[in-house]
Image (cartoon, rainbow, N blue to C red):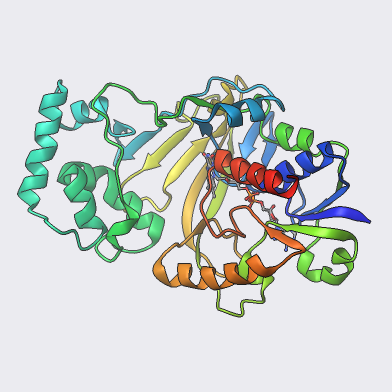
Length: 365
Ligand code: FAD
């Protein structure tokens, strides 16, 4: 008999399992995929750690979480400085003085601020009614047209004028020559890839892969006193209040017989015509010196059951459905729900670890 059956070997499940084992509890962790790690899993191709489910860059402002992940492996000094490619014109991200200089030839923060203000005023938008108006009212027309419009429309599969304004609350605008994408104090990539962290966390814990909880539910439940469930909450309740919606992605990898394809790990394609949103060149995350390189083109896709659910669509309709499931979940005494799919929430890695550690604290108080 196990103390805990943990459904899902992603970062949430693995963090809980590690902490429970440390407290002398016996855990069984299962996953329906053929590998551990959930979405942070890396596939080794020609000695390059390929982020199979999209580029993952660890960043946090929280020293405790940073120390926590560093106990499993060392992190390198990778700094995310993505590039925007608009029909072959190259711009630095996030929007900063380098971007403004390239766009308008301005040199000083005052000039850049004046340009943005001038364009915002010319657009005359008082109460933004859609994403396009919201973006223009925040950063003006040039940045919107070249760096936001095409990317966002591809990401969401519809025109920016049909998208609600709330999707963009703020846009990071920086009036310094600083291409570091994140404002956080700590960031990096685990040396040797993310699998090292998960493997270390799950050392000595029973693991079963290619096992779907829903296909063996009663047998699995009989094996443990309590369950940690990190799968989809609507699936858990048989979709009785309806299906929660997601956006999905398709990843196409190419192995290339060249040492360096694009000179940067992340290049965003911000025009509307290019069908993918980004090209990731994985070796740059770890400053790889291999003769070959692997790139991944990222194509946004509609989600339908059976496809990977990546981004929750947290609009009013879905949030209302989620709240109904959550009410049921809160009444369960044998099952704890956690992680991005059970909470129907986009979490960065540091947030999912924080959420798992909060659960551990409550469970083992
Ligand atoms: P998951 O990793 O999804 O793990 C859940 C696991 O449960 C999965 O392995 C799944 O197979 C399993 N499962 C589900 N249902 C069942 C079932 N019925 N039976 C058995 N197993 C089941 N975060 C960052 O901090 N930085 C980034 O740069 C970053 N980039 C991202 C890019 C993309 C494209 C995406 C989608 C996310 C990104 N994230 C990033 C977020 C990061 O991936 C998540 O925070 C983290 O992976 C969530 O962990 P989790 O354990 O909640 O979920």
